[in-house]
Image 1 (cartoon, rainbow, N blue to C red):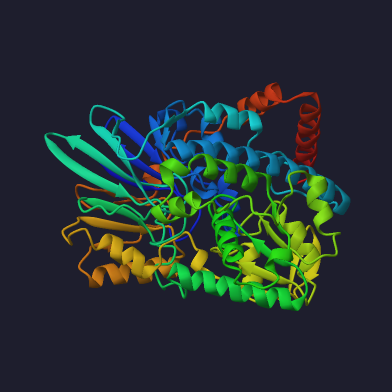
Image 2 (cartoon, rainbow, N blue to C red; image 1 turned 60 degrees about the horizontal axis):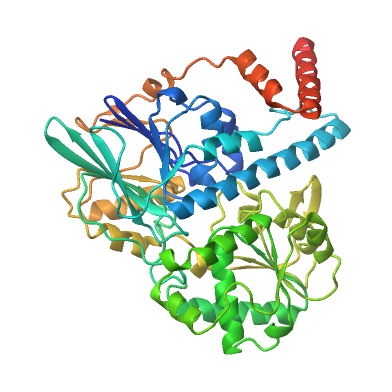
Length: 523
């Protein structure tokens, strides 16, 4: 049995792991790379032949875990994608939104590149289209928590609640070979304990191998208790309101947005922030709006006891009186021309795409505004640059001065901190054969692996494209994976895209291809 590490290795995004068990070949997650230095990887063919993968196991619906599924299907994958019902619903929303944003970005970049006379690094086409998303969605097969699914005669998988976002999972893969049984546990992203709305992560205690996330593996959240986080949010909202300008909250559309709304609804219920009842709270994210509806519809399957109790008392988490929905682009634009103070919750959470970039452009330069970060900002993203203290940032090709107050509230993180991660793995005996540390910045992975070793766990930090043979624990050269990569038939790919495009899209693609050919000839 071999484990191939194809993403989120010594970095946070692009989760993708390939499990090769003889005749059974499985991909665990198929995520998009979101850190700017690694965006080129999204354009590369899957490092293993897509048509040889029998199944994909999707831990949850965040883009860095599901974002390349449409591309994988276009490259030839024809197996099932097993995931929970909520993850299936959310993945469709997220991938459709991703395809639409890509189309918008391509149109904008094409216009800007031609105006500036720049040569694009990649063809000016989306990574995938809405049609590609539709093909991928047909492969989804919902599986409930605790219900084992047989992938082959020798491999089965069971989903357990990870407490990260609605439907998120820890996946326990059981492999039977030659009368022996081995268990590999993939944590996906582990949530915090005592978080609002969702149940706590499931505790497991038996595994031979663990593939474990480490996003916050080097530190603990400053705010650990729900009451502390609510109090700090109340304080930051009071300060932001006192400045007089807008409070802009970059937020992941799925999970984080709903948690913020939940806490604001409780602050309004408790009347703990004077004047908050007069400040409109905008959700400016079509994806966030749709995801919120799924949260409401799924309450009976996924909510924890506290959220269920509040709901029974009549608290409206997602429909309080000051909540304003900005569904259309026109409604989004009007927000920045409304002189009233407001709270704007918009995506994407790392400020790399979507409507949040427009709100940052209109508010970063204002000293009376506040930008409140409530989620992880990966290295190389716009959000991280702002959080790290950049005096100016480039948005839509324009240099924007940063004069707004920049705040961060870590208590909203959907990831367990170091203490939480150690608490979770502490239920396993130190006789676990290997713990593979991933989904964290390189320095963070190293710190967390060190903490595991102190506790007797044999931890390693795989690099990108590294492969481990679980029988000998020998590391297989990275080339062993890449050699399996098929040659890309560019002409066939271009032909297929042209055939599936409408007349206008096909005309633009032909124009782009001719431009690329001319540039190649000039070299």
